[in-house]
Image (cartoon, helix red, strand yellow):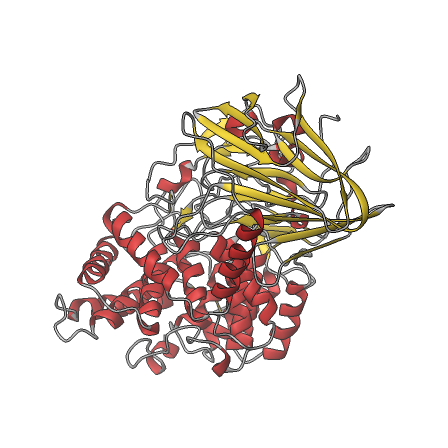
Length: 624
């Protein structure tokens, strides 16, 4: 068996998920990345970031070389993947899924693969190569058959992985396990991989077809809750389902299920690569806001509870584990060669501790949106919001690391200052509703106006008619595409229009996509940020250029993989996606862009809270 599998573009992978765990599947049926029992658990299959010796599990037609599926799709609006393979003797279908959570929110840590002959007669194979601790070690593997059920137990790292099914796997000296079997039309075999702590009893036999039916019903029932009935509903629902798969039962939303995937071509072979299997406050809040706009409130309720329980505004960091743990110690995995040679592979995130106070803008904006949609206020939420106001009052004039967590010198980023304004504005909107406000609010109204004045005086370049990246800079910033939707100024204000036009003129590719910020200072190359490009769609709609926005949105939809998934960036020269995959921020931005293009009644909740009297000076502001 060759040591390195043929590279597959990241967008050609499929995601399996059940809100706790996740796995990626290549078109040839190989699972090359799987973390059980949680998304941030050590991977059992890690060949995505290395070689075949670092673990994989392929199920498909037998033959000298793996073959790609002729047809692949998710079953309707679910996370059940069905792949069909055409052979010289028949058609083989493989249905892959992680069993759905129970009504109590529990989910088995398992992967189920149902192999079925659709036509003729097909020789099939299962090639199973488990490697614990991100592919670092071969586990101790033994047969543990019982009552006619064939089972393999792979022990290592304090865990046992049980592979069960009606076919027996042979065990070879290099830790590769194989099962060859022949199926005729209508026959099927189910293979189930289950995670258990070492020493726990073996999993009980289960009905894979019943689990399949329950999983399909879970996802379809959830998707039926989508209130959106406008154009591009298929893309919107697929993005929502993808986000839901990364919504942990405790409430946090994970940014992505992978680590150390390069976002720029120059990172292929090396670069600053990041682990994004965590709840990044910014991405999590934006994702929940998108789900709320589609009519999903349960996720918002759990997220709000997770936030209040785990995040202290006075000791803020940008990311946390799904269980709320703030410890994200970083480690380099030297034994992995990286995706297409991109090293070093990292787990953990040392950058989470950098000051990003502006994330409070997204968070409080989402809290208000959820309350607008029907979540009842609570004293705990009000106390949390008051802590946000106190923190911004103390620190809003201090430089920070910005949205991109720039290393080195902190700056007065204009985007961050506007996010502070949003945090104060939305906090006031929530607290002013209370019949008995928990604190005097007059000073915070003055604070909101002071931030607004500061931004307009120092973050705007009147000669170039654009808000700039940071105070004193001359360049625009793609992050400022938020301005038309923020309520900071009216969308027809010349400063808003000028900022959108500057982003198009100076930060866009020839195809209209928004360029990535490659090194924290300069824009360049031809690699686009998918999230910022979708936000440009929203900005264009806001300033009255809907036809142009529609054209850009259609171009962006065409960049999705065959299963509708998106990574973080798109290389317009190589015509492929890059980055951790799939990416929550890209999918939530797609949803918001689609909602902005749709007629107003099509969405469940307005895209942004409407401007309120006194929220943003209009005539006075325009005169500054």
